Image 1: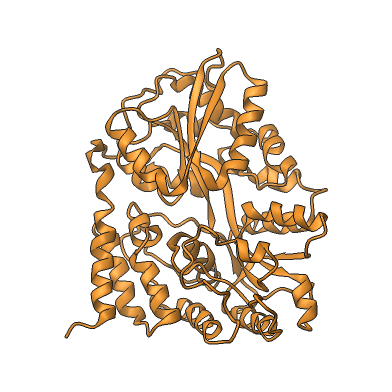
Image 2: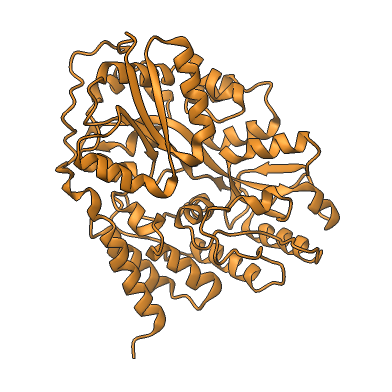
Length: 441
């Protein structure tokens, strides 16, 4: 008889692979779309043209800040459309097949490799290579949109994962509120101390068990901190069957088996309310997206609980890492206003714009020099967040099939975590299921 885990592994792989189909009719092969970037000025054209831009709802606040600043200072006007996260793939696929993509398309950096390989974007290699400060920009967002040496994307909004903890709960639990975990063992120890408070609705930590995207954002950094990998270099094979990943998964399994160790609903969490339990003061310590920390700091000023921030540690003390995520952006194959769209991209890459729309708003810039110079008076916790980028230990995983293998609902990665934390996992077999999807692309 076929075991349940083996059957669900197989079905998850088939379902995830099927999700690759929607953009297959785009006709792209990584050679760029029909729009032309030849002959446009180095800074683009600002002549009063309306430019359309699509981006995802999780980064709505930051995107609106960017567009508002550009529109106030330019003749061109950007018309921003916010797409619900779960609708993005379908909308892009449909628009690509009907040649109705916006001038500028921003999307999850881990989905960019697939879009670029399918010819969604216009080749802007010459323009990107002509930027004086290219070396200072978030390289993962450029590399994600690079196919066979052609460059299609630049960073739009940077989102990194960090560790946060509730200082009020730490005090109650007898922990030092100024010291977050410096290893995965300390993470478990501190979470269990908060769990032992036995307060109504309070738990040690929280995990988005049904959100592949949140899970990679939370768990991959600890593996990278240990010097291990999650995929091979070309993104065609999973390498999750390693001691570091096993150590991280075992840590969450220990919390899952501890009373109040993981917050109620962790196993079923789809990511829609992933950050809410911590924001509501019910969680002791957990990995968290930096784009959501501003709201925590604002709430603290209004009388909310105090928040600690630190880099995400590995299983061994002394090393840290982060998931260099967020959205990259490119000019779509369907744009009729390439020079004007480039004007927007060029402007946002400049240090003055990065300071105005990100640093001055308490958000993370995509320009390393801005990170180093524009935050001297910022909250020390924001400086800590920036440090995880500046230190160079973070990574942006790249594979055309990353979404299907990791992020998609029911992905083999999501099943791997479910099996390991709440079931009886077989890391070797579950790793192979992820590879099967990665290698099918």
